[in-house]
Length: 448
Ligand code: FES
Ligand SMILES: [Fe+2]
Image 1 (cartoon, rainbow, N blue to C red):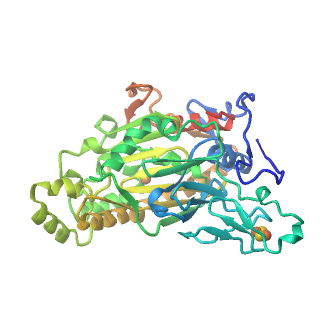
Image 2 (image 1 turned 60 degrees about the horizontal axis):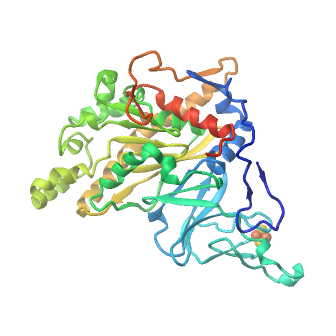
Image 3 (image 1 turned 45 degrees about the horizontal axis):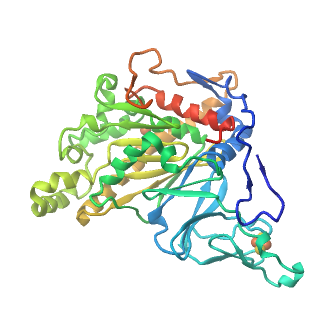
């Protein structure tokens, strides 16, 4: 894979896509076995550099943003696609684009704002100006270039940008399948999550909740589909909740979860989901089992007074969707939130939580959604991040080479549901085995 360095390749696709018939790279088969992965995948900077190209947008689709974050014509949002700084933009007609936030002149970022509205970006370094679709508008004192051929100096564009019901993905791979095909069996789960909104409208709300940890990005992905750890890692949260009331939320992970109704599903293409819904019974049970929230009684009274028989259904929408959907490689849909995994270095990662509101419900429901969305990131996520950092510390020991993902392998837990979707007991590490299969496919150079 090479970036064309001829200045004549801009602003369209400056990416010289690898040949689809190139021989696949077999370096990984010793490092990823059916029940374990080698520590180098978490600690080797060369592996990290390679996956930032291949897994994070070189060949795979990666999540970029939610459409509600670029709501209007000429809106923009600064994001990352792997390590590439990228601006997601809407043109004046509202069409979606993604351009590298990297000046075609001498590489400086052209946009230093997180979000806003702009028809164009002027690079602060020497003043070159680019349209929000990437074309060079002009450079100061152009006679210094003889005849400035603007066609040669646009921003590099992400050649494929597609949205699935508001979720915007991008890839440098012009051969990638359409995004809805690639989402595949994850799509009905995402549909469920979106359609909890009575109007199917979901909006990311204002500022994000960002947390960084000193560990590899894959540690977050290992954990996202892990139904094994909650009873142990989140014990303090569960104990605190039980002291404050009779909340059941998450406590069911501690009671022989393998025999219970919760399941994990391996969905293909590296995606997986944990379904906690079967432990709840009937309308109102999400709400009834949530941990205490400041001031919720007042809101509940109002919703019950004004909506009568419909109150239970509405109150459940204030509580998380009770699925943990992992879309490989960087999108985690947890509760009512969108969490983005942003790798920064082989041992440094940022996790960004975006709270959401929904259409078609009374304001009280969205206010309470906010309260329930503050709960886990504040009280639960630090437990997970401590584990990620401690796992990274443990991974520094070179002689202990393997990370195991064998739980569930020697059992009769798995059943094939349909089209290759595998269902298993919630503590099965099948989510890891599934995403490493996809990781390996991409690292080997697969284009589709
Ligand atoms: S680096 Fe942007 S104008 Fe020079
Ligand atoms: Fe956790």
